[in-house]
Length: 91
Image 1 (tube, rainbow, N blue to C red):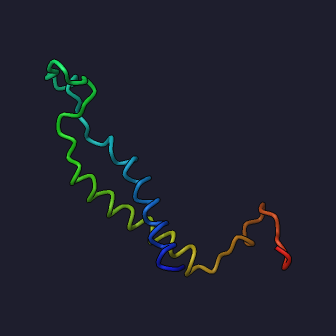
Image 2 (image 1 turned 120 degrees about the vertical axis):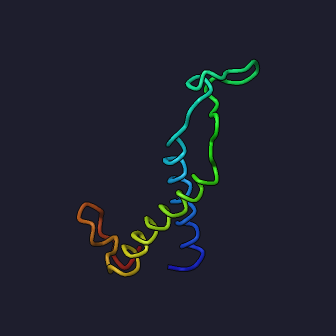
Protein backbone atom coordinates (compact mmCIF):
# COMPACT_ATOMS: atom_id res chain seq x y z
CA UNK A 1 0.00 0.00 0.00
CA UNK A 2 1.40 3.38 -0.94
CA UNK A 3 1.56 6.33 1.44
CA UNK A 4 -1.16 8.21 -0.43
CA UNK A 5 -3.51 5.23 -0.40
CA UNK A 6 -2.86 4.68 3.29
CA UNK A 7 -3.61 8.32 4.11
CA UNK A 8 -6.78 8.25 2.03
CA UNK A 9 -8.02 5.07 3.70
CA UNK A 10 -7.18 6.46 7.16
CA UNK A 11 -9.03 9.71 6.38
CA UNK A 12 -12.14 7.82 5.31
CA UNK A 13 -12.00 5.63 8.42
CA UNK A 14 -11.42 8.72 10.62
CA UNK A 15 -14.47 10.58 9.28
CA UNK A 16 -16.73 7.54 9.51
CA UNK A 17 -15.57 6.97 13.07
CA UNK A 18 -16.14 10.64 13.94
CA UNK A 19 -19.75 10.43 12.80
CA UNK A 20 -20.19 7.34 14.98
CA UNK A 21 -18.57 9.01 18.03
CA UNK A 22 -20.30 12.42 17.80
CA UNK A 23 -23.57 11.47 19.53
CA UNK A 24 -21.87 9.93 22.60
CA UNK A 25 -22.49 11.92 25.77
CA UNK A 26 -24.44 14.74 24.12
CA UNK A 27 -26.79 16.70 26.37
CA UNK A 28 -29.05 19.12 24.52
CA UNK A 29 -30.32 22.45 25.78
CA UNK A 30 -33.80 20.95 25.90
CA UNK A 31 -32.65 18.10 28.16
CA UNK A 32 -30.66 20.52 30.33
CA UNK A 33 -33.68 22.88 30.52
CA UNK A 34 -31.52 25.83 29.48
CA UNK A 35 -33.14 26.85 26.18
CA UNK A 36 -32.62 30.55 25.51
CA UNK A 37 -34.28 32.66 22.88
CA UNK A 38 -32.52 32.23 19.52
CA UNK A 39 -30.95 28.90 20.48
CA UNK A 40 -32.06 25.62 18.96
CA UNK A 41 -33.35 23.25 21.63
CA UNK A 42 -31.41 20.42 19.99
CA UNK A 43 -28.05 22.23 20.20
CA UNK A 44 -25.54 20.50 22.51
CA UNK A 45 -24.68 22.20 25.79
CA UNK A 46 -21.01 21.18 25.80
CA UNK A 47 -19.99 19.27 22.65
CA UNK A 48 -16.42 18.45 23.90
CA UNK A 49 -15.05 18.19 20.37
CA UNK A 50 -11.38 17.84 21.43
CA UNK A 51 -12.15 14.74 23.47
CA UNK A 52 -14.24 13.28 20.65
CA UNK A 53 -11.46 14.03 18.13
CA UNK A 54 -8.95 12.24 20.37
CA UNK A 55 -11.23 9.23 20.81
CA UNK A 56 -11.90 9.20 17.06
CA UNK A 57 -8.17 9.25 16.29
CA UNK A 58 -7.45 6.33 18.62
CA UNK A 59 -10.34 4.20 17.39
CA UNK A 60 -9.58 4.99 13.73
CA UNK A 61 -5.93 3.99 14.26
CA UNK A 62 -7.01 0.59 15.61
CA UNK A 63 -9.43 0.07 12.71
CA UNK A 64 -6.78 1.18 10.21
CA UNK A 65 -4.30 -1.27 11.71
CA UNK A 66 -6.82 -4.06 11.07
CA UNK A 67 -7.44 -2.87 7.51
CA UNK A 68 -3.68 -2.56 6.89
CA UNK A 69 -3.13 -6.09 8.16
CA UNK A 70 -5.97 -7.38 5.99
CA UNK A 71 -4.70 -5.66 2.84
CA UNK A 72 -0.92 -5.92 3.21
CA UNK A 73 0.03 -8.63 5.69
CA UNK A 74 -2.64 -11.32 5.34
CA UNK A 75 -2.06 -12.04 1.67
CA UNK A 76 -5.78 -12.01 0.86
CA UNK A 77 -6.77 -10.66 -2.54
CA UNK A 78 -10.06 -9.86 -4.24
CA UNK A 79 -9.77 -13.18 -6.09
CA UNK A 80 -10.08 -14.97 -2.73
CA UNK A 81 -13.65 -13.72 -2.20
CA UNK A 82 -15.88 -16.53 -3.52
CA UNK A 83 -18.85 -14.51 -4.83
CA UNK A 84 -16.84 -11.97 -6.88
CA UNK A 85 -16.23 -12.72 -10.56
CA UNK A 86 -12.78 -13.94 -11.53
CA UNK A 87 -10.89 -11.60 -13.82
CA UNK A 88 -8.35 -13.00 -16.26
CA UNK A 89 -5.21 -11.55 -17.75
CA UNK A 90 -7.17 -9.44 -20.26
CA UNK A 91 -8.70 -7.13 -17.66
